[in-house]
Image (tube, rainbow, N blue to C red; front, side, top):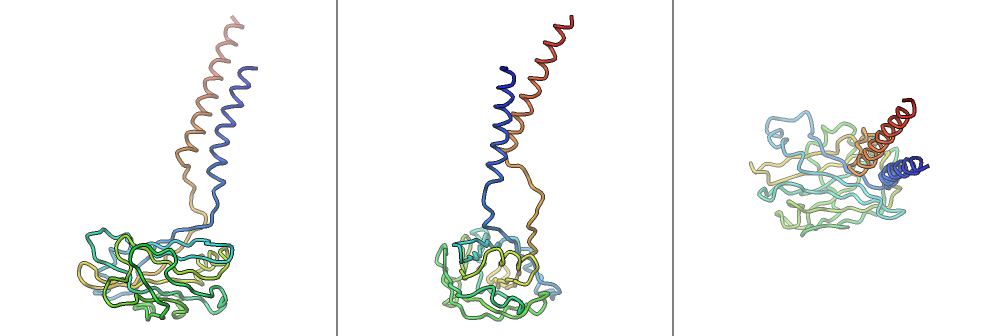
Length: 232
């Protein structure tokens, strides 16, 4: 009876860890950026910095979606996002509406909703012009998205529809970055998003499963020893 109670407790603990991990809501995703190809030699100089920028897409409320552009460059670099652009395929023209810039900004970022002319966008597959977008409100980098800062653009939209559009690339986003170490500029656009990545168990899950495995092994050994004694 005691063995059964211990076993039940171990299994409940392991299951609780798994359930805790699986129960987290999936209402936010992070997307990386990628380089634009083909590109001239001059345009490829800054391609190595593409990993310094990221995009978070969050269900802000039941009817709004927030796009947060982050500059994760080292503080020693002066790179800054000068403008951002959204390209929505005409087949889903109603996907986004009521654009509001500067939602959830960090730092001194300040953007308007003027449509930019994204350099290299003619080489982005499926790009259908700038549907929405914005630029820094003043020249220079003071209002741009500098190292450690974030810019937020909020829209009235259905979160699930937005994610679907990102997956099938009917919604694409681009950023124009300036002030690289070599004083050049470059354009990056959103990389493919995989909604079903290979799951990696978190430490708490592994701990719960590990405890369960060790406990089962110990019970098996104890049961085996008792059986051996009875046989002798």
